[in-house]
Length: 478
Image (cartoon, rainbow, N blue to C red):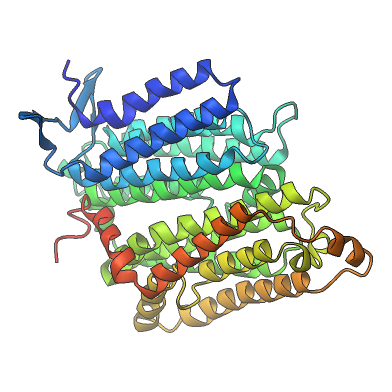
């Protein structure tokens, strides 16, 4: 058995590290630092590893294989996929390094590292059908984090588990149905049925409108830090998996109407998210609608893959993560500093006078996700807005309504944060200055990073276009 393989390093090694974390889970600080160090080293190794998988060390030449065979099935991580691997382990590091400061499960370091390794496994396993089984395993592990210890699973967790589980047989059935279809191209009914099952399965996985109803319920029941990590990893990985499906199967990407259908699904999802977020009065649910809106943008980007949508998807990868991280970190920190905040809008009234940097950080992360010029997500969203404007006029008023809905919510939130509460004005002044210097530094750093990405995208974002390299049929060179 050849151990000099990329799956051995970035799949089996972290799973082995997870086993160590199980043994020390009662020592939360040690668990967090082991998970952080392991994730960071794996991310750095993937960044610097040569794409040829060959390097010299101390005068010796090492050649790594990109495939590991197990039970006659292959796990393949090519050199072009290592950028994605590095990103996922970097996300694990970012969420673990700050998770120690919040009241999350002591199992978070262990399960988060296992989930990261399993998401990479879904991108590596061949044939693709096994990816659906691994996704279901990830969902089962995620429920351990999403359900607070000592509490009964809420309706949001149960609906999440059901919707994700229903997607499993749809993907498996589609795979069975289209087996050998490349040699039977005349079997158009099978192509159509297989496509419907695949798209429905991904719609359930990604909570595309109108299959999203469990998402805000789950966000209201779960700690923001845990919720943001679970669905960031799911959203990021499933888009890469969908692109791999489209790249691998010509019959799927060449089906008439497949991309226009994705465009409409994306626009309607963005519209639903924008309208619903404008009506929200629960701050804990906001991240769910932000995820719904970004899911819509990602669907639209895949639908516009021939009009620059792929580049928009790659350019949005890191800024979206940073905006999620900033929102979840700020909200978790606010709830830790001020436990009396119950998640309703009235409880946030006058927060700016007490926590000015946290208040500004909440607004800036929202403005970044809105696509405000000079912030991180503007370059990617500008590509999509220009593409849909050039393609057809029908999408423009729907997008205008969606953006207006999110902008209205941001204005409502600014008004709430700046308006003092007469009943608590005196106590708010007495408790001013609760923000530590370290918290202020973190919030300012991520705000500055978002500004730099928006102002200098050619320096900070263009290198991430390499995430598209594995999809050579979907996005041919040039």
